Length: 281
Figure 1 (cartoon, rainbow, N blue to C red):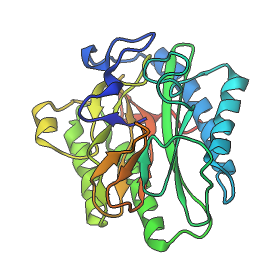
Figure 2 (figure 1 turned 90 degrees about the horizontal axis):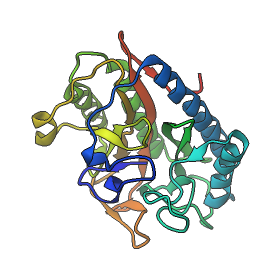
Figure 3 (figure 1 turned 90 degrees about the vertical axis):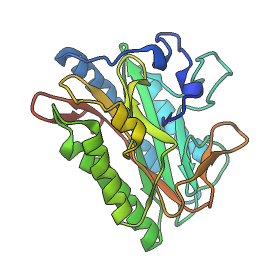
Figure 4 (figure 1 turned 60 degrees about the vertical axis):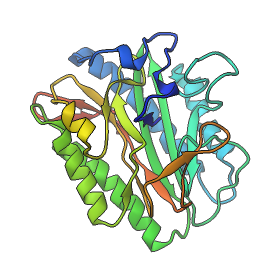
């Protein structure tokens, strides 16, 4: 679930965590990282089933049901439903975010029917034995226009650039510059209102992890260190990078209503590089 760059409801405390803005950066040991990998496997299985269900004629609610089934089977706890208060009936109303075409992130599953040619971003996270995993993918349904297909391929590769370049001693701005540069050179906008985040016992921990370089990042740059675990989630769009939140209070759309893509992995910095914890391995 994307983290607003300008605070907002994501800074609200949960039942087991302090407000994100009050927390220092937390490094995880090997045992804790392996616990997060277990959560990551559940996330990957849920996204696998959601992807299979994401076909023309299906509703976004039916896609969401696949992730709920995985939670029921494994005993894991979904990170999204009722977020940020985790009080029944409050906060986000589903266990996944399902966002179609111009919807960038935080789309609410419901009766909307998926059509041939749509792109559908699915974001899901869970907690198992106190440790979290968070990941997202964009599914291409049927005959997707070549330009939109390129958008998805580019955004997915932006995430791969992060994986290839995360290593101890490197500044996050160095990684973010490579991510942003690749997307811009390919002709796509980089969403700047929502960014990645640290993750561990809580879904949203420090630090914020932008997919672009800004004065704020350079002033508060992050040095990558073994044990730092990040949810890295590039969001790119066909046209303007400007977005807005709809009246439902959650769904984020591009202001020009052109398509956007979203990919995410939970990634742990190691002594020699990094490991993806949400790839199912």
